[in-house]
Length: 166
Image (cartoon, rainbow, N blue to C red; front, side, top):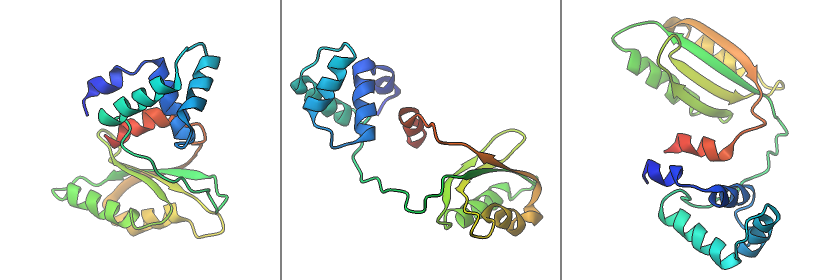
């Protein structure tokens, strides 16, 4: 998929993606009705053709079931890590990543350029032991500094977040 495909999205395509992100099973007639409310006169046939085009261009890669958060936990932490400079920096980063992706509460592990080397985002549960602290303790020999901050990720732009997966 080319970057042009993303830059060519008009307001109708963006609204279709927003509706499908909310419920991928929304019928094209309902999508057309919703768009008519916002001043876009499109038929359900047009919606079906646009969805087909979005799928063929690779913007819509598929559909999946989204499960309810049965844990009821809605708290997150970001861990910023500064790793000691060494010839094996990439090996250390990979070791940290390999450890974290085995955790059931991690959301993201990212390498960074600049002052900090890695960013980890995890879901926290106060009933369990502190995962963030465990990560830092496990790799304390490789770190020169770290920061653990609670973060609010309730208002996420799903369309823009999907760009991270490209």
